[in-house]
Image (cartoon, rainbow, N blue to C red; front, top):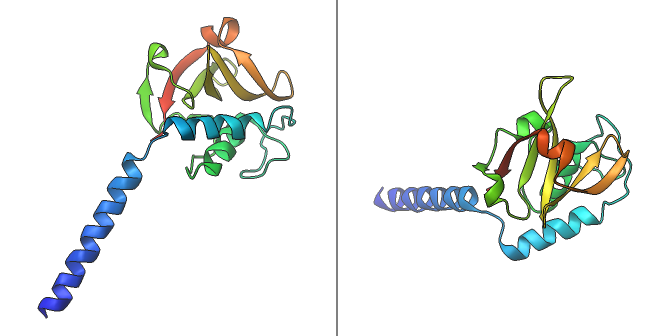
Length: 153
């Protein structure tokens, strides 16, 4: 009986350790560079509202972030509003490459757009206005409609 108990304890310890490791996993600088590289490979891909998850033919804003993060081993929810609920909130002054940026949409009176910060006051996103994946400077319309940034862990 004590052997079975020891085995159960070891399994429980391993499961707890794995869970803590997964929860505390965050992007390293090397992984941030890889995430940005993956996202830039999608530049010019067409915008399609309601695009399917986990494919790279076309994107809406949240399927784009979901696709890129999935390539890094992270499972993001499907919509920008759902994605805005995960991760750790960071201020504009604390932005790091790979952080998710969320923007207000007047039509729905809620978060309606998401992008990936790539550094130097720029972000990459699937733009409904430009009808493709583009890099945009974080100013003007986007700065005024910025709601929050989240760091995915």
